[in-house]
Amino acid sequence: MISFDNPGLSTLTTPRQVMLGDGAAAKLADLLKGWQVQPGRVLLVADREVAKLGLIDAVKGPLAAGGYEAGVFDAIVGEPLLETAVELTRFAREQACGAVIGVGGGSAMDMAKLAAALAANSGEVKDYLGIVTFPRPPLPLALVPTTAGTGAEATSVSMLSVEGRKAIVLSPQLIPLAAVLDPVLTRSLPPRVTAATGLDALSHACEAYMSVRATPFTDSYALTATGIIARWLKPAYDDGTNMEARRAMLFAAYLGGVCLNAGVVVGHSVAYTIANRTRTPHGISCTMALPYTILFNRAARPERLKALAEVALQSPAATAVDLALWVDELNAVLGMPRSLNEIGIPAAGLDEMVEECLKRYPRPTNPVELNRERLKPLYEAMHAGDVRGFARTCGNG
Image 1: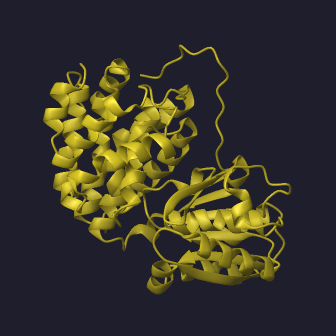
Image 2: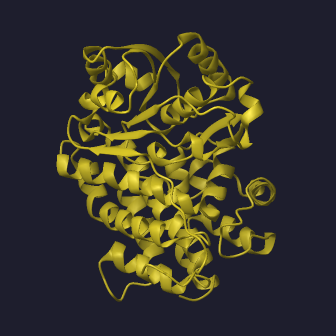
């Protein structure tokens, strides 16, 4: 169901160019030349694991053949820290580059966005936290994902950790010039990372579809991404060499990133409160929260969630409850944790998490108002891993 009931203005921001295909990374030099980036020095930002696996060679070699010398920053490990962003900014300003290439997962791509922006602007990283406009346009930026999930190659957000808490830099200027989707680079992903990142993409699509800022643009991307992920995530998890599944998941992850034009809802707020207490990867914490998010919002979004359920389960009789149970079962099949208790969060800490969710991540895009009375039962059910129980106590649909 794509809704056209809102007479307001709908906008969509995306990369100017998107390439999808096996070996697409080898075309980076041609891409840069097509956008009038003169041969010379470029900055290549990658995470340490990607560098260790040699995946950046698929980018460095073709760049060199096209006349682009890459200065490499590959000190990104896990969720990016403010300190890493500061170090990268210093490095980027020293390079005098004509463009920035980000290769890796969401962390590397988010840091590449900051590098492109801050190499062209003065000031400290902390000066740009929040919703910002950069005085000068960022350097040309191309992003090459090596995971299929974050969708960071399509978004205007850079996430980082500041003093142990999630923080963002948000600006449409951070959207890259180009997204290069090369499924070959995802072939070596281990099953657990395939699952975690794929579920992250599913969370983006489902949450964007529930958002009060959903538009016909994001609705179409969200429904398409959900259907693709429901069909292809398990095959990609079972057999990483299944290139049809890898292509499908990389495309779906990109669509999920575009969906973030609509914003996300309470599930991401809950996920951030988890991230602030455990080392649970972002995609896993989001998908742990997703069944409860669906049920939390089903009374306010009954038609939408039924449409989403029909697409995911390929059944015209599917309901929001069926969708929530399907996500929970998918988590189980893919070996993901399904309760806060399972990842070591004590029940005694739930009140604190509720307060943090309300104060730090209030989520006005959610179709149901967040308050203590509504959030506490969600956290309690999630702590126990009781999707069915929450379905019985949380509205109709």
